[in-house]
Image (cartoon, rainbow, N blue to C red):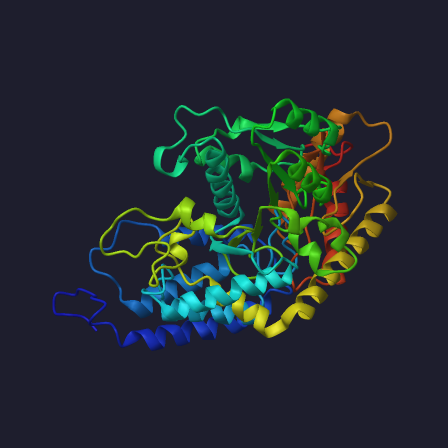
Length: 487
């Protein structure tokens, strides 16, 4: 409905909401059904993106027209990262229950700041954090916060570590900041992720504050070096970062050994388990997470192996009261404090106004339970081994690492070809994969060599998707190889 002036006012257009939602629902079925066969990326569709641009409309087209245009362009051009053949980064899909709950979160549009803003969202988040604690086998005293990503989970965890460290310096870093204090020692093996560095950067420590102790060019932790550094601190507090699931090959730092060092030297142990934390769900891989309950903080992503929509991460803290100390907001008269009965999770993490991101997590855990998520993890473990076998059988492919989890690190190779030429070839294959779009995987550098590192964490992925991936890689390797002359 429009006024005579032609203005599309949402108040006047409010009756269009139900029809618009019905249109989205109608588009959802064909889009979801297409994920099993559609290309991950269709370069030819990129021209449609121009339909989003232009000057800001003076008078809008109304709800129906705007939603129709967004659906038409979006379903044609969106990267099918929720489909079964997106192996780039470490990106999960969205389980049916989580997708429906995410729509519910948008429908209810709760501000999950505190009990007083939404008792419903607060209660769901409370349940979800306890369910996550149980899922990973942590003790009853653990708490946490739901955040937007693993980067924010690292930020939240290391924010608590900073408050702890300042306390041991006799300082209140929450009130006074870091000025006048020595640099906080942060020690890690070579698997430390850029998101942990970014978190330290945002916290004011500097991204290069991490002291890396690695015993090889891959990055495996040098425990002796870490212990010598801790001993050299003379009892001063330090923060250790253990990495559960290195992004290039899925390897793990020895969490249990690092927990022992943390206890011996009075250090804070933070575990970056963005996706590797889910190894705890299977008896086949739970040994990789031994010692996790001895950590002080853990960071993980929900939109990776839990298969819930973006944006979803979580920080789990052994002493959850530190969240309120580190992230409670000062003195606005109309806002509750961290300990106020009307307070809540907006006072336990970096975000104040917050979407009810707990709903998709609650729904997927309620729908499939511990055993359903264990089955998904173990299916991906099997698929990774299947991919490793296909790589080992292909004469022009070379696996570069063991496969402890869900990532297979390999490259195209040929005996006698110089390393620089192999690197160029693998970069060309990576670029061709992205441009081709049938499957999606990019390159990395592992042990000084350019490689592919497909990660398998999507609930839809099947052996047929893995076989297609290998076939496409081999096809593009032949097309871009050193014997091929450019036109």
